[in-house]
Structures are given as C-alpha cells and as structure tokens.
Length: 278
Image 1 (tube, rainbow, N blue to C red):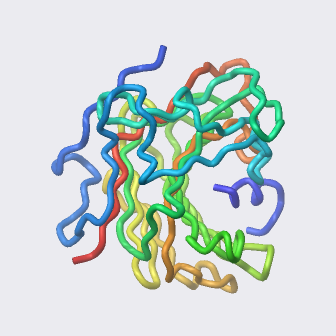
Image 2 (image 1 turned 135 degrees about the vertical axis):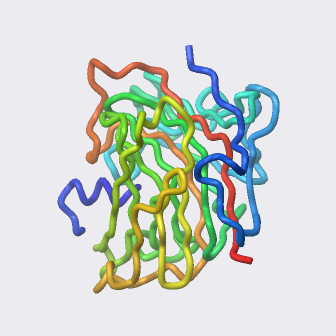
C-alpha cells in the first residue's frame, strides 16, 4: 500500500448490515490441497474489540508515507466486531487530535498481525465488502516480518487488494521489491468486479509459492508475478510476511474526499484465512 503512493509521487516503479460467512461452494473458495493454518472469523458480540491475540493496532496521524489524511486509532468506534461474524473498520469525518499531537479531520483504523502471526508462502485470503466514495482507500496487504530490522522497501510488500473509492468496480494488486536501499521495483495488476465492490462481499486472495505470486478475485486468477517481473529488483519473498487491514482516507495516489463522499464509511471483513499447501 505504501509503495502505491510513492509511485504516484514519481518514485520508481447509519451503516449497512453485513452479510453472512461464505460457504465452500461460494466463488473464491480455495481448491483442494490447501490446509488452514490461521484464521479469524470475527465471531463475538457487537462492539467487541478485535482479538488482541491476533491483531495489533497501528495508531497515529503522520501520513503513513502516503500523505494520508486520517489518524488511525485503537478505538472501538473505528474497529470493532459487528456481532454478525464481521469486523468493521470505520472511517469518520471528525476533528480528532491523537496521542501524537497531530490534528486530523478524519479517523480510521489499521490492524496488523506483526508479532502475532506471520507465514512464508501459502494462500492468504479475505472476504470483504469495501467502502464507497472518492478519497477512500481500503487495503488487504502484507509486509515482510523483518520490517523492524531492515525497513521498507527491503522487507518487501504484497498488496493482495487495494481499492480507490472513486472507481466503484476496480481493485488493484501489486508486489513491491527493493531496488537498492531506498528505491523499489513493482509489478501490478487490476481486476474489474462486475456489480462493484461495495454492494456485496467478494473474496480477495494471493497464492504465494517459491518463485511465484498469484492474485485472485472470487476465484479468478488475474495476475501472476515471477522474479523476472521485478528484475533488477531483489526477490525478497522467501521469508515470513504478516497481514494488514486498513481503510485510509486521502493519500497521493487516490486523492482526497470531495463533496460527493459520504461519511461514515466502513470495510466489512467476513473473515481472514491463511492456508499451506498439503
């Protein structure tokens, strides 16, 4: 997600009710041969906070490398269970001063599994219904678990799904690899979702194996990335990665909200599941 904004800047390459969980017959279910290793089904009472054994909050309003306009908080107002088997990540238009002293006109949430769960290779999938509106930027993505040691972009990044709210049907996927100490190389793809991304839940997945990363939407393969696609960037995708979920507001890639944007908005997460081969 971070690299998208850098590319754009000129560097190298009442809320609706939520749906029920998926069944194996639904589009996007994994094919035979995948074994579940980790999941969150977001079962619990309405208003309960995300499971602290699985998720950590990122907090602050410093722009997150993308000139984003929100402050991320750890409040239940911005991220809590819906009581119907979903996690709801909500973006509000509100005057807010965070613990970092930064004043922002929007709030939202960003959750990660860093220090709780990571895995090298596998199928990582989430069933999501996305927010709608110019300036909304929801994402389901991954970064190398060694980020605190090597920093970004050396840790690597896999963007399983990003959506710019100004286009109701288009989702993006990308892989970002280091090219030297600060620059990066990217390979990306897009998928047009019939009927839009905000009217129903859809399954977004990556199947990641040695030397190949495949992106799928509702079971449809739409982009495959191999090391040659990132050359001369380094292939840093043979180590554990952790998961992130967030809804950003603004940023240099998609631009700010405008007069057509309605708040609050939410990303509803039915589940996140991780598998291994065999």
